[in-house]
Structure formats: C-alpha cells, structure tokens
Image (cartoon, rainbow, N blue to C red; front, side, top):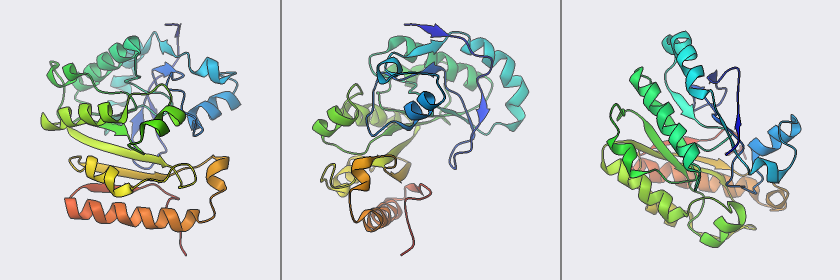
Length: 257
C-alpha cells in the first residue's frame, strides 16, 4: 500500500456528535457511490483527481509519531477522538489500515483518551482482547439497509451488512459501547425497504444516529422527501425510547411542516 506523510493529525471537529478527530488514511477502497462526501471534497480541493485514485488508499506513515507530539498538546481539551470522517479505520480487506488503526486506538487509550470508531468494514475479534483497550471506547457501524444488492451497488467494496452487525454484536457482548450510523438513509426511489426490520436487527446497540441522504441527484427526484424523513425520524425516536437506546437525529433530517 502507498503511503503519505502529514504535518498534523488531530483536529477539532465541527460535527455535532464528535469532538476531536483524526484521519490516518487518504482515500477509501469501499468506493461508496451515494455519492461519497469525503471524495467530493478531496476532489474539489485537488487532493485526489479521480474516483479510481480515491479507491486506492494511502496510509499516513508518520501517524503514530504525530500522535506522540499532539497528544500532550491537546490531551486536556480532548473528550474523545473519533476515527474517522474522511476515511474508514477498519477498511474491508485492507490489513495495513486495520493494523495502524489498532495501534492508534491503543496509543490513545494508553493516554486515557477514549475513542469513538465508525466503519463499513467489520471489527476484528482481537479488538476485544487487546491489552490496554478501554471499554469506554464506542464502536459503530454504518448501516442503511439489509439488502445486499443495494450494498453492492452503493457500497461496492465494503463488508456485508451481516458481517458488520455480527462483529458489532461481538464487541457489545464483551462490554463495549456500540452504536449505528443510519446515514445516508436512502429514499424509496433508490430502494423500497422496511425501516423497522433494520432497527430490529440492531436493537442491542447503545446509540443510533439517523440522517438523510444528501448530494444525490436520484434522491432529489423523490417528491416526498420532507415527509419521508420526518416520518422515519419519528419512528427511530420512538423505537429508541421504547428500547432505551440513545438517539441522535442529524441536523437537517427533520424539517418543519
């Protein structure tokens, strides 16, 4: 795998549910076609030129050295560190990425910094047994469907939905906090599906984040977007209340009538 170097790694997020963040990989081999917001931004900035270039990830070779410098600098301000917003820390079929992610999580935990993690890959079982691993870490997966045909079209190189849920349940059963990001949730003209079936499959988690699909021409063609997301957001809220699950509806998902 190719590598790059960076001058900084940790940064403070402007996202409503995250604190400090890091992205220790450039690009993502999952190749999501919603389209991928991270790819759009990197292409606009000239960091990557093509979709194919984006799908050939490059690890940040000096990531651990940067953390050694930056952890003491930011430690008193950090509530948690999120992995990741513009890449995937447990990228499917990318062992170099997974190995570096494990080392980063260990290093942060050893400094008493907890991590929140999100992936469209799956979590290795060894994650639950690593020395120094904090049970205060929160591990999440992105899950917007259970339909594998949909996944193959829109998240072509990611892990199966079944494997994501299975790996998350494994960590949950071993005392880790788990969560699911249901974003970007597709409109019915992309796929007709039962939201309740997806919610039932993840009823064991501690938190659910729900958000609408943006930046999609096909989604904008659906006439009843506002009513659709308002109804689904209410269903997620009620499901979470019933099952005592923390709930966060992304800004802009619910609209006033």
